[in-house]
Image 1 (tube, one colour):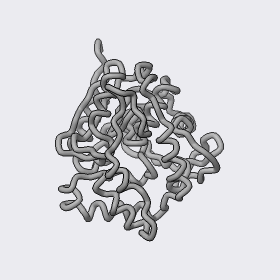
Image 2 (cartoon, rainbow, N blue to C red):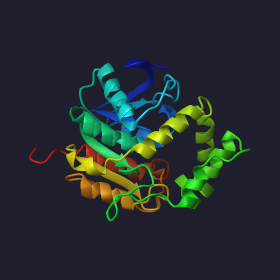
Image 3 (cartoon, rainbow, N blue to C red):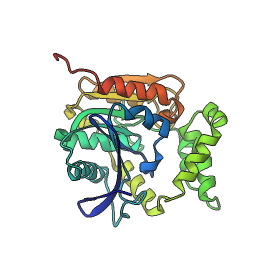
Image 4 (tube, rainbow, N blue to C red):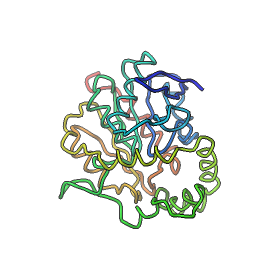
Amino acid sequence: MPMARVADANIEHYLEGSGPPLLLISGFTAQASGWNEPFVRLLHSHFQLIRYSHRGTGTSDRLTGDISLRDLADDAAGLLSALSIDKAHVLGVSMGGMIAQELALNHPQRVERLVLGCTTCAGGSHSHGDGGAVPAAPEVIALLTPQPGLSREEQVRRAWPAIATPEFIESHRDVLEERLQTSLINPTPIETSIGQMAAIQAFDSFDRLPRINAPTLVLHGDRDVLVPVPNARVLKGRIPGAELRVLPGAGHVFTWEFPEESSAAVVEFLTRAPIGV
């Protein structure tokens, strides 16, 4: 697998498709292979996709200490440099959307246009009162909490109702099982899961969001119980000029549940001519 040296780590990455570069930033414990292939294939004819595994996931180097989402955003910027890509469109989902916010805030020269999917401005249970981040319900968080005695496979299956709608779980169980088996080829180590969760809990971009100057699309499912849809409205309201697209009937993994609709929204936004051109 292709590797790039980024700071002190070797980062697994893949380039595919043709067109302007589009960096895909994956979510909690996910890796380069974790993107829904139908969704990715629908982007191939429009963009050169850059998929990669965060340090500690896939075949990228393992974590050697604490990590922050800003550190992971620095990795993303470093990967673009290693690939001689000055500027790219960026699509981040869930935790990847938080990393994408840090990338846009701390490396604005690297971000052409920004798509924030199923994400939030605050990863912990804290919020900013009226208009602030909205956490998941305690029973949803409980589904993601490791249970003693359950295998890795059983833990993942137990978490499905937190990320997908009941209808999708029932009608596409084979898809979820295939995704599960793929994730077990290079399973994410427990220290990575713990480190990423701590980084999510420490993340807070609410006060900094007005500094994002990249044209931004916020994309969210209206049935997302892990990151409730009011979080998308917060992002839309705080990021100057941001647009909001809510996908009816979609849960947290909207790229799996509605690959055609979600990819079409991404393509339309990222290929739109700038105002005045």
